[in-house]
Image (cartoon, rainbow, N blue to C red):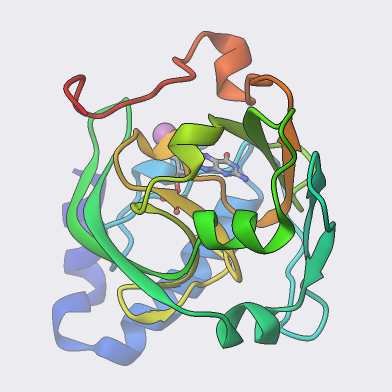
Length: 216
Ligand SMILES: Nc1nc2c(c(=O)[nH]1)N[C@H]1C(S)=C(S)[C@@H](COP(=O)(O)O)O[C@H]1N2
Ligand SMILES: [Mo]
């Protein structure tokens, strides 16, 4: 209902410049909406905005950093340029979360998480990976085996364009074979741990092994 009214009123289909204005407006409203209700409004890329944090600082290419540490031989810090300079991979998967919303066949581009882990060198005690975010709240986790899958990417691009702030940019995780809650937005830390530390939603009962398809 909301979406029909809003899209109709603004004539979105005919006016691409209005679309980006709409996306910006939506992002601004979403950031001040702790209820997550703006997630019900339409965005032009098919996504809905989710954030458990009321407001999230913006990171520019100049001030963004990704820390990679914990049980590794060589703790590392990456700038956005350094991440772009590493071998890039493109993973196309269905985006789907637990409430049923879906964006099928979505390309994410960036650096394979396995490659980053290899650069830092996982120590033998390392069994899992914990992700932290510069919203200061959200966390996620994967086992080391899951983290090493080729369809798990530290994403810089969505639909072949740099990730926007609303979509979790400049860097988010994309775990293609799992529910989208695994794909931490505003990624700022990757830490190798000796066991799985359940993430934000997992503390509320979401499955740590959030496979989309139980056969995966
Ligand atoms: N930092 C952070 N990452 C997050 C979330 C969040 O609230 N904060 N929500 C998760 C959930 S439940 C979903 S469905 C997706 C939503 O991503 P989107 O806002 O780009 O659609 O991000 C996931 N990653
Ligand atoms: Mo979600």
